[in-house]
Length: 63
Image 1 (cartoon, rainbow, N blue to C red):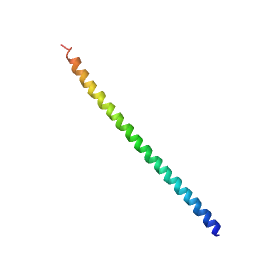
Image 2: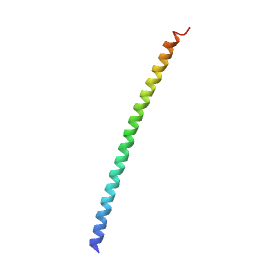
Image 3: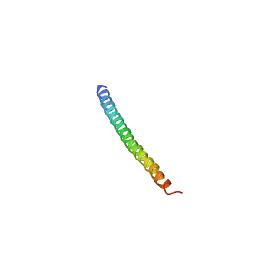
């Protein structure tokens, strides 16, 4: 009986460690997604600014 309890405890510990590792992986993925999202937002802001500048330059040629 004690051998079964010991085996079950070891299995639960392994499952807990696996769960903890998966949670860390999810957290890392979320952080990476946030970083990429911030980069995309920065690029979008740059495109918006360039578009506005281009419109100003084009308006100089409109008569």
